[in-house]
Image (cartoon, rainbow, N blue to C red; front, side, top):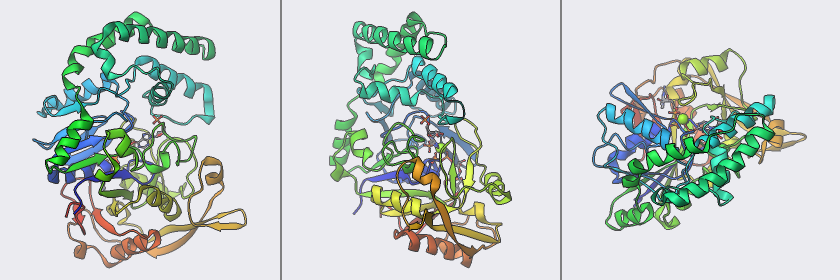
Length: 430
Ligand code: GDP
Ligand code: IMO
Ligand code: MG
């Protein structure tokens, strides 16, 4: 029987991971974020009340469930405390239930400054990052110069590392990008000021998860972003700077791969993307606008409009293979309610070839021309439906066709943003 479940985005992010993590948290002892940072925006709606989480695991609204931030996550202390304060104001106690790995790299003001400077310099070739400093922070980690949580316990070491990093970043900011330098003293004071507040939250995430597992507790691994934004397998260079695939849960949380029993792939019933980069099934017409309006497709973090398009089976095939997805959770089915016809991309034309799986990197993806099949819409209300039998016949046909095309069964269907607006076909923890 499945005990631990990994939840990942199978498209370009914003598939509805937060809602499903919150809903599944009922069944678990712990929820862990294992990659990304506050570029994520995970929306939870409970009894009509909305909470957007960026860094804190989406299990936090359930009393008694422990939340963890694993080593694969890059943490901005400022963003962390802003989020903790927002949650405290809403009556959620975070500090007593949150543990952060000592090995997490920090996102500091110079990372954000460089992220912005680079994007501005790229002009119309920009990636469209969230501007949170994610890329530069991961670069520091790989370059072995990151300031990590553990450095907060040793202020002389912290000071030395910061001095070296500020010098490096200021050289780039000033001489490469013609921007204002960051002030070392200011950065140091800011970090040192957070140190006392962060220290009590730091703990051995990897060992604690192991102990919870040994004691029979179930664990939910919460992915951020989506597979098509993965640093290796996404539409590079229009990607984020971490691995977003299910395998990253093991390295990023510090647990053995054998502990990952079930991979739940979150799939929007259509496709969206925020930021630049190729998007074969993108719609530029009235239908695209309608999806954006009905789906309220605006970034949860940046408020930017999301680009919208039809469901893309070749992209999903790539994603499901890489992640070893056990079951699909199709979200936002209700957004399609008014459409007379719905298209599904089943393959691409790429030059004189037909391909049924997304190629790697952005250049080839940009050349993919979708081949569509058309299904009749249902033009009936599915918003809030909680039983599969209560879905209109054509909606069931659409779901059936999606699972046939990608070869993985649908386990969950989401019919609205609220926790309760969910249909279970097969519970991942059953
Ligand atoms: P995440 O990043 O994958 O957690 O997704 P986001 O929270 O960024 O974006 C998903 C958006 O869709 C949020 O505004 C959710 O409240 C909303 N949402 C989630 N599931 C459904 C659904 O089934 N139907 C509708 N209409 N909205 C949903
Ligand atoms: P969740 O977890 C959608 C996108 C950005 C940009 C690219 C790189 O809410 O699904 P970055 O700031 O990471 O360097 O930006 O990745 N991006 C997301 N798009 N959902 C997200 O997170 C995203 N996180 C990053 O828009 O195109
Ligand atoms: Mg999001």
